[in-house]
Image 1 (tube, rainbow, N blue to C red):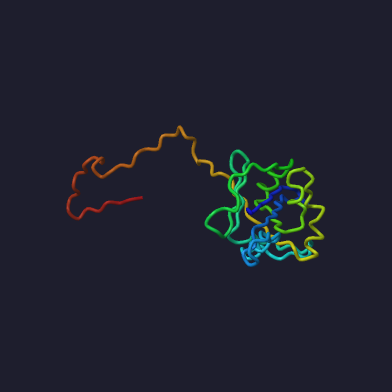
Image 2: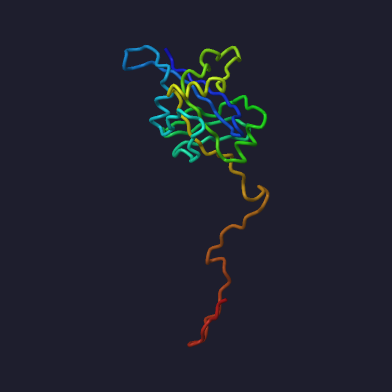
Length: 185
């Protein structure tokens, strides 16, 4: 049995959001699937238990970051040595990218019972419909995560930057007469 991770982008109350749901083999029970695997890992990684959506903490969670590249592929960095997912082409709803880049924040919702696993192949996954119930039952972790975009160069590529000069390149200066001072501005 392999782990599964389901990711879906959406908009919620003027915020860009990413919904996450994942399961993995449960090592404690000898191999059954743990439907709450991603939820448990997200809580240990710093996302917060969320039982009331009206009381979300707006402070960004440390060590988590959403990176959006030039091709609009998304990477989610988290407190591990490898990203949770790396350069995936998400179906971003209209308005998601401008909202994420203007606010500099994406809300992450990691839970179980969001119906993403059940509807992974039929396009009927609607985590927004289940989010309030999942939060109420204590099966939702959430947090605000900073957004990073590709770094653009400060100068156009065709600008020539002068090579550094060594003291050997400087013209020789006449020694100053004894006792004379040099004034510098």
